[in-house]
Amino acid sequence: MNNFWENISRYPRFFISSFTGLIIIILTPFKGFFKTSKLRFVFLIFMISSLLTLYITIKNMLAI
Image (cartoon, rainbow, N blue to C red; front, side, top):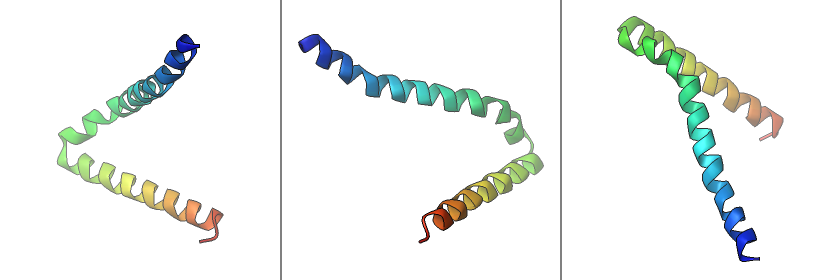
């Protein structure tokens, strides 16, 4: 039974490390945007608009 709880306790660490690796892999191609100030500004505007759209969508889905 001790082995069972040891295995269960490993799942959160596995999830966090997998999620962190996924985020790093997804963001790696965008590293080039930060080298040019004009592209950095465009990327920043895109990210803000994406987060705002996501926020508004979730807010409307929950009828808040």
